[in-house]
Amino acid sequence: MNPFMRIFRQTSLLLLILLLLVLTSACGGSSKSEAPRPAAAPPAAKTAVPAANNGGAGQTRVESRKLIETAQLTLETKDLPATEKQVLDRLNKRQGIVSSSNITLDGNGRRNGNYTLRIPAGQLQPFIQELADLPNVIVRQRSLAVQDVTEEYIDVSARLENLQRQEKRLREILATANTVEDILKVEKELSAVRTQIESITGRLKALTGKIDLSTIQLRISEVTVMTETNFWGKLQGILRDSWVAAGDVVLYLIATVIVLSPLALLTAAIWWGWRRRQKAKQAVRSSIPPPSPPQ
Image (cartoon, rainbow, N blue to C red; front, side, top):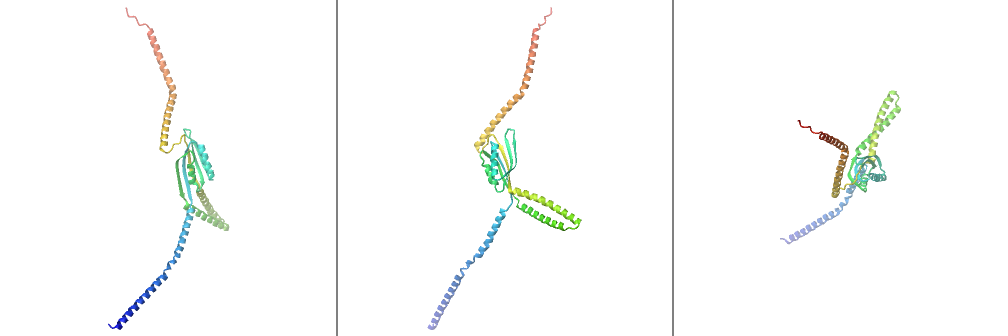
């Protein structure tokens, strides 16, 4: 090969290698200059803000829900008046009221109290727990219930607002009516609207009362001896009930004897009289001599 051609090829190869190196470095520089683009992430942070706002709105809706809370509680105690006083003291501290109360006496001379208590909303569960923790008291039954009436409350409120707007409009029409016929028609419509407003207002007040004041149905039973819920307590209760049953049997027997004593005495008197008459007859018969034999 010609030396000149060999030098030319080597020079061309070197130039080609240099050109490739320049292109590679240019590409690397462009990629490094574009690397900071991830800093454009703030738009994603902006979209997260509405999500947080939505969560806050959801929490506001939950907090504004209308709930009716009710509870039932049955207690056993040895001293009903003392327990009743403790319950009422704790109720007064929580600004509650006694809606109704009734105390009865059973056949064994034990008192039973039935109470309907009202307590401000949000205090029902701690108040029930406070009653359950009273000294010398055993909880026999406890239940709580929550009714969500938010939709009904909103619906009733909206209906009331619409009727009030309708009433206002009818009064405006009544003020501009000229004929007697028009006045009577408007007054008839106005009376019907007023009737609906009074009915819905009563319903709304009833809902508001149940929402603002939770209801507790409380029963307090007075017992001679409170039965514990553990094994030994139950065993003692069974033994005690057995002794009580045995005592009742003895009492029934004594009562039966007392009731039947007059009849027994009468029967004994009749029998004694009859025996006496029989003995008298025998004495008379023995005193009569036997007939003599014929001659």
